[in-house]
Image (tube, rainbow, N blue to C red; front, side, top):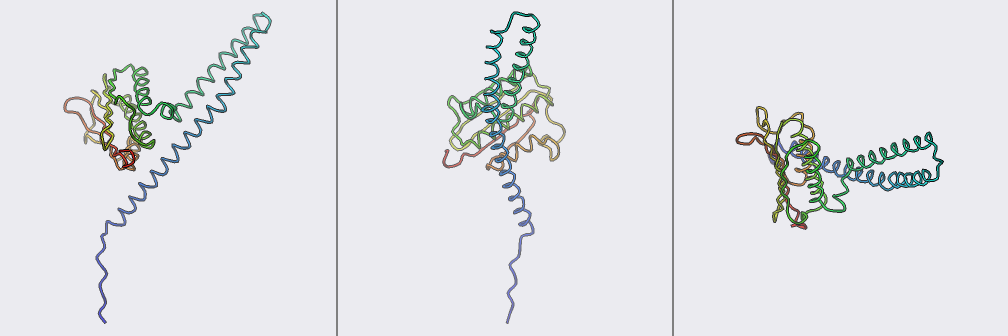
Length: 238
């Protein structure tokens, strides 16, 4: 009885399947990571933040009732200053973990605030062009855009030596496009996102790929570089 030969197998198939599985796993890790950061930020706000607010009020009442002794007043003023510093550190930790603007005011406001803070911190002229209305996309897309913008601006500050930056967000019918363009020194030889190093940008690229999009980094014609993120909209958001 003749034996049928097995159909030829594609030697690249196992590698492609493994790559797809790793991409799916990385996307799941990112989602869990974002959810955990969001949860920690809310705990800092709801628990520690509330306690610090209460302590500030109590200290204010005590200072009003304290004897007018210079030593006591000085100590109380020092305690008030320390408490104020703790409040500011707590707020900064909350923001670093999760941008509440994304939750309560939308991704458009969160992106605009991130650009404004970067411009003020680094004394750089940043031109920001955003849609008039908030972006029509799920939260996962918003998080990817926000993280990609953060990494792009950090990269500009660390390596570009730029004096001006353009941040443009387009909300098209079937996709979202983030463009960050600077007038700095440009890219090293190769002119693209390297395979090693640049972990923040590579992580942003993987985040975009998990949503079916892409992140590219290319040299401009004259000076600087342009980072572009393209995210297709899911059918439910289109």
